[in-house]
Length: 454
Image 1: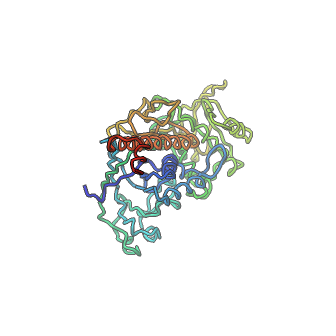
Image 2: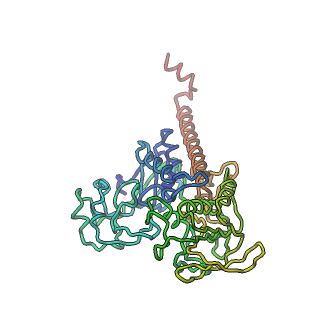
Image 3: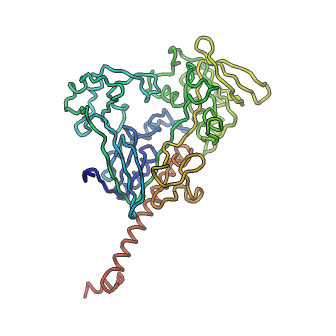
């Protein structure tokens, strides 16, 4: 392999979400050279896509963007974005990661982020970053506060018209760019690979994504965001301001038929958060949450739940059996009321499915760490050492180890960085002791000093 594609660091962090950034910053602030490997074209993970966070209702971007900028400008941190991890192995006492960087078809050293290529591009496709509610160009900056601010070309939808290349002031467009392979070696690694949401297309009873105006929780986050697709909450099918919005809890968790038998922990709280935000933006709308159990497990979470009820948000203890298409774009909810009314139906203008958490990355065949029955990375001491894995020198942070909220993710990311720093310190001490033991005549520290002085 070309030596230009081989790198050595003190630590590798897999994942550039809020957990990975926290671990990387904590390690880098201690002077450790750290590589952050991210699969997306920008760091920031899921949190940068959110509107606000519970229970404080603080701006998600206001929390995440400073950490993204700090990581990008930290002299001890190197970012590898748009990369896939092929394998991670322990070899000769070190951690080696084989990484493939997918082609952006843009020379990132030449790209200045002017977005002229994006403005000139004639191709528009649905923008996944905005929940599919608005369009994006075939070549674009991923989103307004993306880091790095470098364009990426979607070759699947590019028509090779050449307009982006002709308008680029620095000649950064490279249509024949090839994937690059890296071999990154470090002494320790932190797995902060995050999560994915269960798909609304997977459950037949809820329409498998074919019922208009049934969306998932991340799509509602984009509708609520100040930089969202519409600038306000509108019904996707016709642009109508909804008068009635319902949430279906456990739509992607606690459901053996979907293979997700566990509770994803955060679904109740983000549904309550979104309902409160909707109550503020649409004060005349009726908001209903269909739930089996409300699991408000964190500090001040129960009070957050009680505040939502005081605002007039309706909580119906029920199991939603199915969804159907109603008249004029409405969604018919069939449910069993668990407080005595039995099986009944109601219509809502929009329905939001509270999707659950799935592992964002499977280490099987790529990294020799164990996984639990839920598919998340297994921790060997979940109570006393939640960041420890069964592979020496490799630690886990955030939702890579299981569903959790942002507060717990950041806390565990700091703990993983601490464990990695302790491991690096122990390696340094062992190396120092080995050097002293191999010194002439096996002199100890004080005897060496005396010998030098004499």
